[in-house]
Length: 348
Image 1: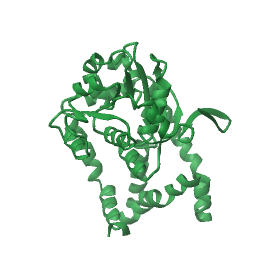
Image 2: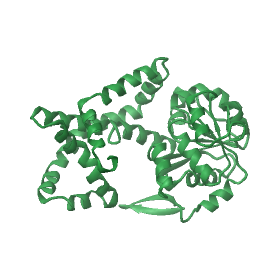
Image 3: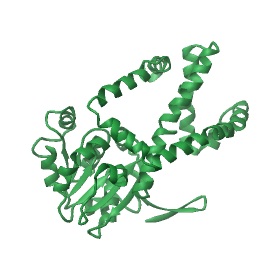
Image 4: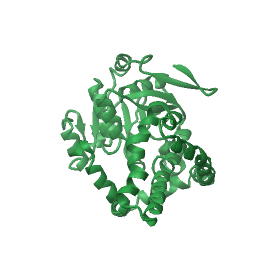
């Protein structure tokens, strides 16, 4: 494990150079990795492991859309695709990738199959960190760890097929066998991580919940909507408002940030743009900092976790979710976005 210096702060990281796929395959050669759930993270992680030569099986409810998707992806019923309980029995490493609400529901069945020496793997610290709310308390004689890709399962798979890697955090919560760190590192490499950085379960879930509600999803949608609305109220067309709010950022500027950082992106924009951005960014920071403080405090108190558990466990959750997503999809801004995307050269 290497130590990298980030502005004076040392962090433990694992790269693919120091822990190559061949080593991961050796560590996992006698394991049966059972991916439980085939929704958001399951397909990407399972397929990447499969393509990397890991003995991986999928556990999913039969006659469900996810079961059919797993079959379409090449998993064979009775060979590499099983009902959840059968997969739990066969697996030596249980990749528990159901939604947070479903993890609570299935936990009694999962716990029954966690025999001594097995490993319980998460991609989110939610169930363990908030175990007084979830009831997820693993037995003491199994390894418990996580690998959390910093992006969706779709992105993990897409980048893998492009011979790239999506960075992931990793953490060990319980080392019953003395091999937990080796096992989790091997899995992190096997699922296609670019590099792995160390954290713990609490920090992972706190940063994840804050990030999703903040700059990754919630805040960015709010900022998009605010700017778009102001432009429209001042007579700008939907096309102009969307291009200046979303399209230029996602298609032109953020790739520059990804390449070499924000300062490099600024340096590759006009001097007028540079001046405006440098004058205004601290005002946006100061305006939003209190909101981020409130958000993090709610995460740390468990309020966000409880809200997720309560809402996602209701029988009408899917219907309400679709209604909220429809509101986004049918808003003028994202209708304009659909039209703008259709006009991109690659779509014509």
